[in-house]
Length: 141
Image (cartoon, rainbow, N blue to C red):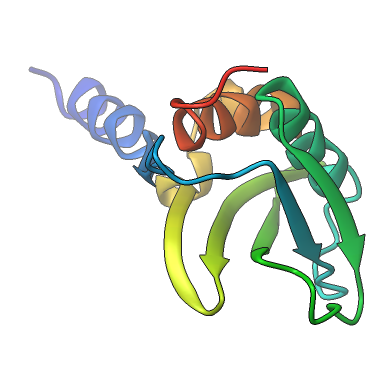
């Protein structure tokens, strides 16, 4: 293999997307979640995409800056952008807890910030919808 071809192969392989999901157990009575607003996240459509994912699986959601004591299931999240001509989602984490106990989690990560993969510029919905579907696989709207 020529050196340039080998280098391009390594670069393309390092641009893989990594998704790790610990789904919500279908025996959990998850009907509603409280999303704890994270003002540090600058991915404007991240929360609406998450909320649509919950809705698609029959779960209601509300967003709070200060969580009311009545919240049984809390969603905490982070989403990071990278820059390559334009900003794009390169890393996201979603955690669902029940009274502080981890119930489910998901991590989306572009290895090498996406490298040469043009898919890195896909929108938040294209990246996070499959993650939400895996996270909530046992729930059907």
